[in-house]
Amino acid sequence: MKQFLIAGNWKMNTDINSTSDLLESIWNLKKNYSNSVQVLVCPPFTNLSQANKTLQDKPIHLGAQNCYWEPKGAFTGEISLDMIKSCGCNYVIIGHSERRSLFGETNQMINNKLHAILSSGLIPIVCIGETLEERREGRTFVVLEEQIVNSLEGIDEKIQDIVVAYEPVWAIGTGVAATEEQVDEAHNKLREMLNNKFGSTANKTLILYGGSVTSENADSIFKLTNVNGALIGGASLKAETFVTIINTAEKYV
Ligand code: PEP
Image (cartoon, rainbow, N blue to C red; front, side):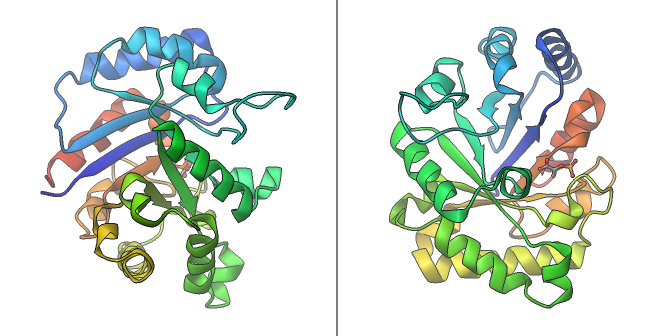
């Protein structure tokens, strides 16, 4: 049976009160969740504790949008995995293109984070994706391979414990999602790259698509063989659209 993860990346949106309001709205619209479609929300760090209180034991997972790899110490402004765990999170997004382009994160830094997350027992969501320029130059798969090889270095069989999110940079927050053919091609290629590098264990790795997913285009994406869900920015901030996207995934399990 196909497994899905529907993940909301709230980015730098919401405060304590609106975090609870949004989670309550999602819950009011949907109370039954399939075991094959895991649902995750990733509010800003400052709202995680409140989100955890609001969610209590509801079947909606909580995740962080970033982390630091050191356990503690003189790293002003950084957040450790123990801190994230103590807020009730079980997922962490790393390598988002906004972190890469605006905050200078490299594949090496992402790899350091990845190892720390795996040691902590949390589930990493590793984002990769090409820029528009790289796609126009016909370098999409070279870039994706380089990101896979370098950011996933040294994880071996733990490949099955990670989630990969394919997010073409040009599709994030632009309203221009990749076409069905582009998503299909990229996800098939990514599955092949993961299998070549890690063997058949990589068949268990969930591969999410991210980039302007909406309640309108979700169906055409989720029906594709190697798509296991979505990482959703803008559309995860509205309870109705987020719930419609979750319901769409449930059609394919
Ligand atoms: C994202 O934040 O990862 C994302 C894909 O955003 P959006 O859905 O708004 O394009």
